[in-house]
Image 1: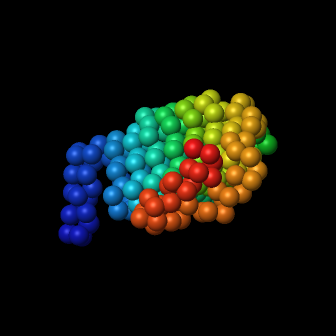
Image 2 (image 1 turned 45 degrees about the vertical axis):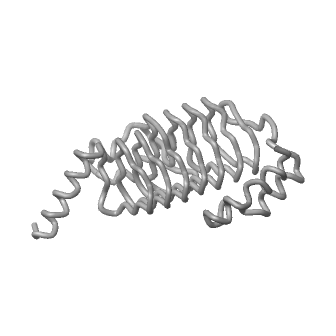
Length: 220
């Protein structure tokens, strides 16, 4: 082991002791982002000004600026396809993202390649319906489950205890198992104006100066 690697390992251990985190070597964390009591492993990119607490993130995961993943007991796992979470999202405690699952078309749903044949990749034991995409300004309520192939559009709200398996239109409120549309947050005209504004892509100063205008659009 090189001197550089030894120093790197010591820094990693110190980080773990001080902040109760494990942060893997391929994890990129943006400016002003806070990570507490979390396990981050894999090719993970976290944007600026995010807050992550009590979460386990494994695999290929991308998280946009100002997103809050505030546990405890949040599990975000990818193995075959990636998971993309946009900007200004709010993810509550006990939420699970599961991009892969047991393959029920095999002779057994048991992870036999991993546990019997000792294939540590266990790719032959799992299946996926595609990447998970969470766009911008999405609120995911506590105890919800987001499964492979789910695509939650901008501005949507996932009610607590929901299971999301497919496409959720912009600014929809959905709930249930599987999650179904309860209602739209706003009229089609207001939804269109908010989507056209792309306020989540504004700079910090631009956003501050446009908050009153955005509130006016929705009638606040």
